[in-house]
Amino acid sequence: MLNAGDTAWVLASAALVMLMTPGLAFFYGGMVRAKSVLNMLMMNFIALAVVGVLWVLFGFSMAFGNDAFGGLVGNFDLAGMADTVGKLAGLASSGPPAVPWPGPDALPVLAFAMFQLMFAIITPALISGAIADRAKFWGWTLFVVIWVAVVYFPVAHWVFSFNGFMGPNAAGGWIANQLKALDFAGGTAVHINAGAAGLALAIVLGKRKGWPKDTGRPHNVPFVLLGASLLWFGWYGFNAGSALAANDLAAVAFTNTTVATAAAVLGWLVVEQLKFGKPTTLGAASGAVAGLVAITPACGFVSPLGAIAIGLIAGLLCALAVSLKYRFGFDDSLDVVGVHLVGGLVGTILIGFFATTSVNSAGADGLFYGGGFTQLGRQAVAALAVLAYSFVLTLIIGFIIKKAGGFRVSTEDEVSGIDEAQHAESAYDFSGMGGGFGAGSGIPTKTATGNAATKLEETKA
Image 1: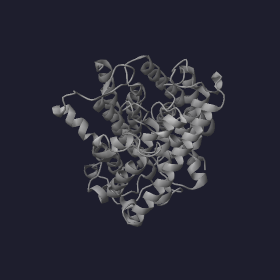
Image 2: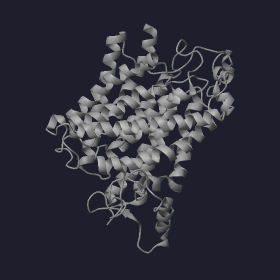
Image 3: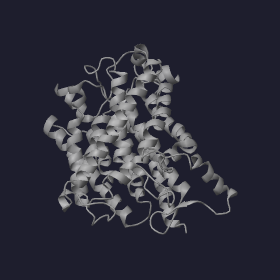
Image 4: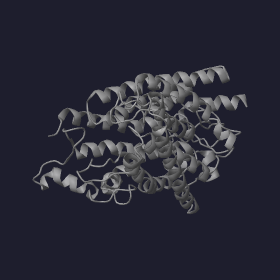
């Protein structure tokens, strides 16, 4: 029997997670040049269109179909959701298909499929921040098509597809079922996956012209804070919705999401104050996202006190990690590596310390709750496996598209602004203001991108 309350909560959560992608677009868009903000917004928005179609055609089957090869990828026995849609249209007399989760009550398959679709959409969108200001729109779009098919859909199968979920005899992915690493809402499949891919693409596309000497300033800090706030709001669907029920576990995940994010903001601002003497708005926004990233895999397995610890640690470490790109020489424009890769690693690994079965009996006890090192080792293996797979495959995909000449804009377009070059549009019209400078003017200005700690790091340097 379908549970109406759980179904309503999952559908509402799916809508919340969908809102995260436009929120991410504003978060990233505020940090880029005024003359490339439309390109940044479009790189996020196109993920909604591309992944939405691919998910129906074959993505859902690859991620949640019965395992086809040793826990690595699902097969196409779900007919790419077409069979499911047909049943809902009345082509089968058995009624709407459902998944038996959680417990004896069921969810419509399409409710679950749409919820998971929003995860698939935002993951490649996260990568876009690493290559801001220099990517061709159609080259990026082609990358999204290939990447979600080759990287995201299989990794989602590893992490999210549990044995018996899509049917009594259905087999799932190796991380969820053989390794038994814990990931409540996507620290590995989403954030480590996207962070590793962002690092690979930053290496493939190379540095922006003038970087790191000329880094400039974000063009619209209120956009950044607006985007971070929308992300925080949508993240309740991301995390609490992953309980797949309107129950006490959803409430725990909701609470942990709140307190971990709050602690991460404080941690990031403390680092800024100690290192640079001033807390910044960008630092608060970036700290919030770092905390959201870190608590994502752990939110359904730790207590609120554990969540505060995870958020605080993530805020501190991610604030320090955003300057690593200067040390190692990779131009990660919007600190995807420092926030999402590092934050995802922090949250995934710390499950091995803070997880407790008193919160979720389906989880495990971490080191601090008498569980020993077993779960910690599982978490480390899962994190490193996803990191390595995503990094290597993204390097290959990126180099192929780049060699075909379809990935990086010309130096002239990069300097003058890629909004005009790629989209024949400008975000802002300065023609009536009497000034000859700004977006679309063609005059090179000292404008670039990065998070707050990065900016202050450059100032001190």
